[in-house]
Amino acid sequence: MTIERLGIVGGGQMGAGIGEVAAKAGIDVVIVEAAAEIAEKSQGRISASLEKAVSREKISRADADATLARLQFSTEPGELADRQFVIEAIVENLALKEDLFAKLDSIVTDPDAILASNTSSIPIIKLAAQTNRPDKVIGTHFFNPVPVMALLELVQSLKTSEETVERARSLGEQLGKQMILSKDRAGFIVNYLLVPYIVNAIKMFEEGFASAEDIDNGMKLGANHPMGPLELADFIGLDTMLFVQEVLYAEFADPFYAAPPLLRRMVDAGLLGRKTGEGFYRY
Ligand code: 3HC
Image (tube, rainbow, N blue to C red; front, side, top):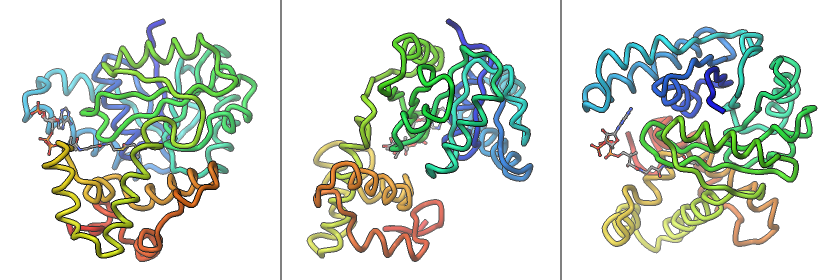
């Protein structure tokens, strides 16, 4: 059951985090990116995270070096041919993901290899339907920052086999994660709860009900959350927040899930949170 060769498509914040954790666990990892400079950025991101882990004494220098040596970066999807498990972590765009799953199905030669998606909201069955192995397609939803967050949310579509769930669970154990299993419904378990909570905080702020600091301190000091909801929105990215909320709205057609105008306007303005230097706070 042990996975020795993992592939990741997309080396952004999530893909790089998954790659780092997998390589740290002794797995040989190939990360495929669209362009050489993005692949380099991904490598830099992982090196910086490992440096932080070394400085916090979470890992030895020798283990950090060995981790980096287990990671290969490429712009050639063909490098994924021999992988036993491939995780897609590209941008949240259905058409791009569908296209990628169709390609992966022909690139990855082992018919038993699993094709997984780190999507935070797209139905897994839509991706599975692009392949000839829908029983081997599953959602593996990691949380940011991947090296720190304990959770791996597995998403079983109507076609995902029990064996695939068990193999994904076993990979999660190799990575030191704790698993929860969700059905293939918008938001899965965590975002179904988390995203409307954050969006409600945005509505409160938009209505002038309380300041951003008071909303955040309310949840940090009164509910022991490590970050308040607006801080967390900035951390996740307001574009991602809006995307997930719209998927929830489309799925349930309930006005409760309608995104507030302020969230839309901030996304229009490029105020996406930490990644652009400004959201509800300045960075
Ligand atoms: N490798 C290993 N360990 C690391 C590390 C790394 N690269 N970086 C940090 N750590 C460790 C630190 O050593 C520290 O460990 P310790 O508690 O044993 O000392 C711990 O992680 C916390 O690190 P920091 O001290 O640097 O940071 P903070 O204490 O300020 O916490 C945070 C930062 C972990 C981001 C915390 O604020 C937090 O948990 N925030 C909430 C994050 C969250 O909710 N994420 C989920 C977002 S939703 C999502 O991803 C799903 C998507 O679909 C929307």
